Amino acid sequence: MSRYAKPLSLRPNPGNPPVGTAMVLAAGLGKRMRPLTATRPKPLVEVAGQSLLDHVLDRLRAAGIPRVIVNVHYLADALEAHLKRKAKDLDIAISDERSLLLETGGGVAKALPLIGDDPFLVANSDNLWVDGPVDAIRLLANRWDDAAMDALLLMIPLARANCHKGQGDFHMDPSGVIARRRPGKVAPFVFTGVQLVSRRLFADAPEGPFSFNLLWDRAIAAGRAFGVVHQGLWFDVGTPPAIAQTEALLSYG
Image 1: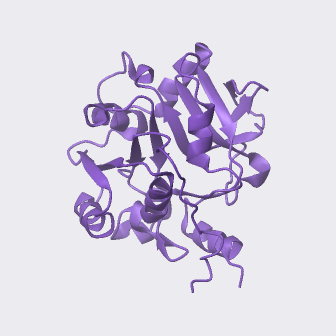
Image 2: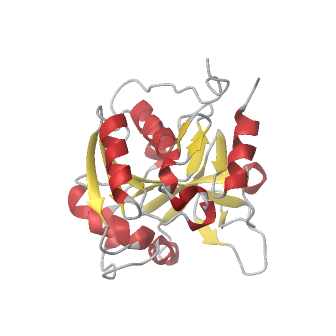
């Protein structure tokens, strides 16, 4: 048995899936993960016995999400081949960004024709999370209020943001409404890379590459951006040293 099996075990959710479609962001260049990404895309870098991408797909499977969109750019052929080998049980569609890397917001905007559901899940492929007492994806789905929200971000307290070197991303009031960290200050919550969003968020979105920050700022200004706190573990696996740190924290033997 893998020494990571216990903390990384999954609890399949009974009943209907919390959302119908998830998009996994896998098109980045992985510059901070060099030299490991010289010959493979960052989502295929292995942590605790399997690739970062497979960790995300495992959690989507456990949540019962039937359809997954994955965007590709850097070493896209390797990603597509991996998905064909390892994810035959999922309905996967590729959003091809080989010709132009569209960043986080632009990548999802391009993929919208492939996404029929509203709301839908968006997950980065370079963060690793372990569910706590409450499944993170179902937590987002249960908290979602379509009348009030355009974006619901899964947050982790800065004090529990393993391997994270930043000063926090957001403040959050008791109702979950989020606000940006002020320059030069520390914010108590870090975005985990997992969020539930409405197609409304992309109304009048610009063409070409742009960051999700643009969409969040608009939603924050309108009071329609919210957060909910993840109850389990989370790891920012952004650099080679973070791999060993993450594995050491996950290991129990």
